[in-house]
Image (cartoon, rainbow, N blue to C red; front, side, top):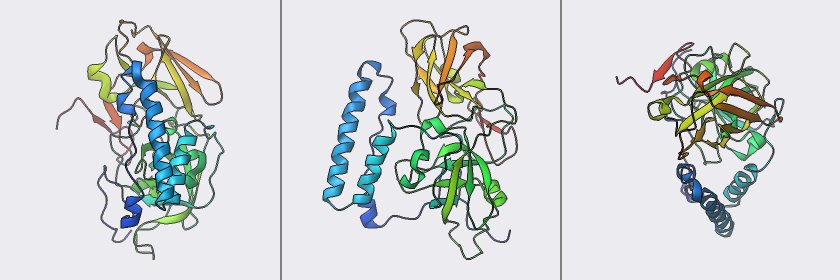
Length: 315
């Protein structure tokens, strides 16, 4: 492929540096997810955060940052709007860049030990993505990225790209970038960036098999108990909406499609408890918690099938 531009590390995604004006227009967004274990006050916290964001939008409009203000508004509205369904496609104005030689353990943290499709990407939240701006619901779904300079490639959503920047589209792991034949930076596009790509949510499965699989979040295994679990269901091409375990409603865990359950105060999250997931089309899938995988390994894309990082192994 010739000489490529320096690769980013698996935990750093390339993005055009912001100007001083743009930097001032992108204040940090409150992260309320880490406060969700405070179940008794979660609703009040989220409502307070929503009001703060609304005030931010007004301030940004006043100081002359309308684009960022609209992005904040879009982010708020997307929390309550309909999710994209298989077949949904964006216009041909999505930014696409290369990510790294492999995915990392963060973001979606898809469980190790399953036969995954080969390619992966990190999904951003630029407003042009429409209903496909990154949300936990899209972890593990398969998107098609089609840039006219190359050919379409299908890749699994394995992470989030520059969350809350409202400026990025998709980041392809290098083998996916190569499969899309998008060049190596020596074809008149030295920064490895295209801005005229189309992204489509496909109806393909995450794995080479079609049956749904459930798994506990790899980095939660060591702390799991009958009082606390973090569990997800994968390999359905329809976005997940909600989940219950032993009748208890879960909350999304970080930027992943796993759901956190607990602390419950009672030891009800046992292996014979029902784990039920509801999808955007109204369908549900139920499995016993004991049937869910408990591997501490995260699947790493770009290094070959079934390669994983194990949270219990210290190198």
